[in-house]
Picture 1 (cartoon, helix red, strand yellow):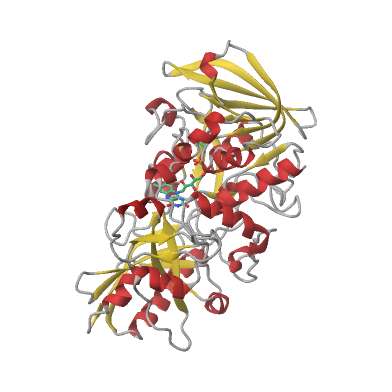
Picture 2 (picture 1 turned 180 degrees about the horizontal axis):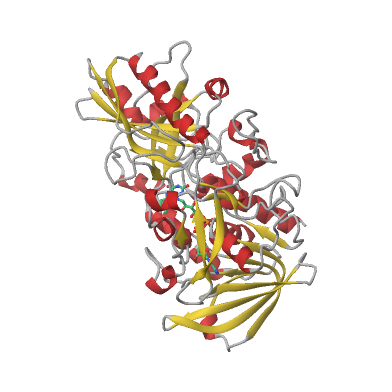
Length: 521
Ligand SMILES: Cc1cc2nc3c(=O)[nH]c(=O)nc-3n(C[C@H](O)[C@H](O)[C@H](O)COP(=O)(O)OP(=O)(O)OC[C@H]3O[C@@H](n4cnc5c(N)ncnc54)[C@H](O)[C@@H]3O)c2cc1C
């Protein structure tokens, strides 16, 4: 059911909820959808309105302004406002749902490269990945079934050679707006839900706790009315989930006096993004690369015929359909191939995971390489408050983001491109040239907006990392804060490491897992 906080009398106390989820983006909406129809009474706080589409109001988005450390200021001075959306549906309104699960190696500690590791395994997440995958309407969950994808894409990656450090892997995307803006996708179900209430125009301002700070007692929320702070609403529930995105969930805990910080001061630390070189290198080929190989690396619309019995395999549909009625039966999305390292190469090199997108010219005799990679979680990379600047609506201190890289991060980029050069040379590339300057220290890059500049993938990870032991992170493997018994976190701030994969599939998988855990306990 939908209600709006600006329709409630001022100072209303909403109570008797089993669960209050704060934030209606990818994570919050995934949880609400999972819990719809359950016996739990759930309140989902959405900052936006039921009609939000595309972009937030300027007033609401202005809350996302903050300040940046020197390094991020050089890489992307508008990162805080550009890479997130303060609205119903959150930042899903920005994306095309590029998806791939994390790899097994992303979950493990990598002694000598990074100590951080997940306290979950890929197997723990597997059933939730399956369910999350359905949010993208991506057909079968078989990212690594190459024969299937070679048939679907009408193309194969370069034939493997002994000793290859790279291999082909599949990415999916869903460009159909109604299937990637989560607030559109789940509108009808949540509107009709009897047990899930979506409270619109509800902004969390303050988390109140017991004196011992080990239980949340109440949330203070406020509306935005006529572009300014409006009425106050209070919420009481048995349990609470912060699902306000990777930066704002940290800001809320900082505003609550560093609620949930541990003895090692991990709160807000270990913030990661995926560093990105859109134009990292280029190569020429003496002979054009066959279309059948180039096609593998091209973003293609894929149409699959779902199995009639719901059990057997999906079938790729290549030919134009004779019967237009079938169009509506098809599963339609985008897929393409990328190059990724083998586990053996990653272990031998002691570097982070990465993904290479190859963009061929129409003649097929030249290629440009796009590199996106895993960053090492790094305590100096942090989210704090900037007390000297407040947001223009509620007057609370803004977030200060100091994104930092380590020498290991530079090394991953250097070695990934060396490995790519070797791989392409063995496939006939005759000229290989870097388009970016990889000399210098961890934070020396090309920053000016031209070919070869360092960019950030729009993925906010870490800062409230999951850990088995309270000394090593902020939330436990159930995503509950180690030191606050009824407060949970959903979203990619709980990622201990980030791999290279776009994170939302994993965010949704973790959110569904948390929803099931809360329902079961
Ligand atoms: C341009 C762009 C493209 C992207 N493309 C992809 C992609 O293809 N694939 C992929 O996997 N990821 C992609 N991402 C990242 C993806 O959008 C995020 O990973 C995902 O949306 C994060 O989900 P979330 O629920 O944690 O946060 P969000 O989706 O940001 O949701 C947070 C919600 O909390 C609300 N909120 C914040 N503060 C408060 C408050 N005080 N009170 C109440 N509510 C509050 C916000 O309004 C918002 O609704 C992209 C991001 C960008 C910017």
